[in-house]
Length: 278
Length: 106
Image (cartoon, each protein chain N blue to C red):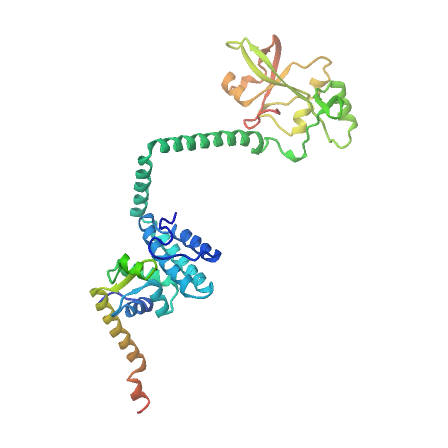
């Protein structure tokens, strides 16, 4: 709230010391607790009292006691102000102020709407990617191990693991209780309606054991897939895929998918809250 | 008879009896805190027992000070004050039993 009375215009002058300025600031803050309809009048009345205290009394204590008492009164005013008529009055005042300068009001509303929308979208992404709890137990015990290659320490780039190197890691790094590998890719699903590109994670059989995830239906990969000698053409499908492509049918387990022309047998369905590793 | 009135309200009404006062004046005369005085004044105004009016700007300008809001007793306020004084006097007499002078056997 701005003091619209220029100094001396009405024949009085405020003291210019820091204490008086501080007291006036506090007074204005207290006045904000008063409903807008009576705020200006209360402020003017209290300023007259404060002016007298700062010119007629020595020391700061009388003003401090006065402001402390006013604060209590301000809280009472605030409580009283929460009556319906006061709220309606405030809304009317806001509407009148906004309609007086519609261009500014529109710009302010658009700016607010854009900011709130952007913040909400950003938070949604952050919550999904960072803040939400992972869908597997004891996530604090999990680590992601990257390997970096480069010509100098300053120019290092992440590099994919080869399978033999991954096996070395799993066997030789004693601080890891178990290790699992994965690689994200896309494949084309055919012979199941229109050809569709689907997200796929190629994983080692040990990965789901490391993550401690159990399937909703069927089984996870076992040693039989690992010791096959040839790449195991078996798949676990997501809960959403199971619902959309198989309609939640129990017959999904055992069904055969065609991915990049490879025949892949479904051995299980993952739980609904499992969204994959990547 | 009006509704029950607290001692603070009676003190403020009595301060305004026969004179007009501004807020700080009432605070000085009653010794009450600003919070108590203003809150009570608002309630008394709402009940129509006191009324507040701004002094003339010319008067304030002549005194080289901001204009004050003065409070005065309304007719209804004066009635309530009289009734409250009677109630208080009756209450005190009831507690003592007889006038103080007689109690000491004077």
